[in-house]
Length: 241
Image 1 (cartoon, one colour):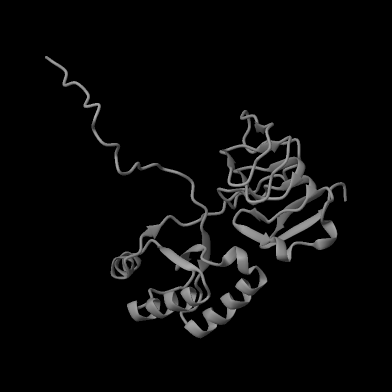
Image 2 (cartoon, helix red, strand yellow):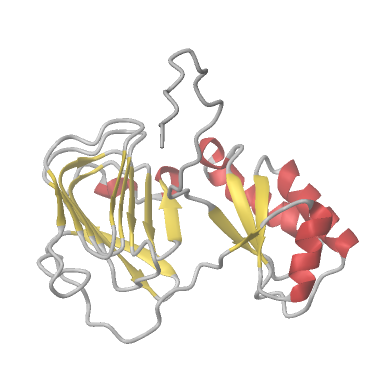
């Protein structure tokens, strides 16, 4: 059997498809009142306009308690867009949500499911999963870069630059300046923590609960800091306190 020779003059493919991690803000919808949604989201956006402007968000309908009608959802989407956010999908497992997604030409996305089992408080030396060593990052994480530690902690022994992102399913440890975004408990581990030696973060998130730099404690700027979840509140304190 003869093999057909490769055509050296063949054009490059027009596209490549890759599977990658994409960070999306999740907006849980508890009411379909567009006025209430617009008012509350406008307040959120005002606290960090550069962060939320033209940010992709998915709308979680699982806590609404009922299946919304198509025209209700059109009004909700309009309210969200008026704040500058861009709805890119719906979250929900019912057949009604599937029908809505088709009518609105939006995909159905997997829900964010926090892990609720009892887990001991994670200290800096502990790991996200027994037997899996932390991912070590010895080079600076520069603007536009993203480092992800799946099923384990992430330890950055250098700096995390502005516009970069460090993500771990466990804890995030930064032994230099943290100027970018730090995301711990990326798959819902509520006991995960963020530790850094020099705190200048653009965003800190743990198990989906986040705060951006405009709302981070200014008195902690430049200091060694840890962040953890207390219920639904993201708390910060100097290391050693």
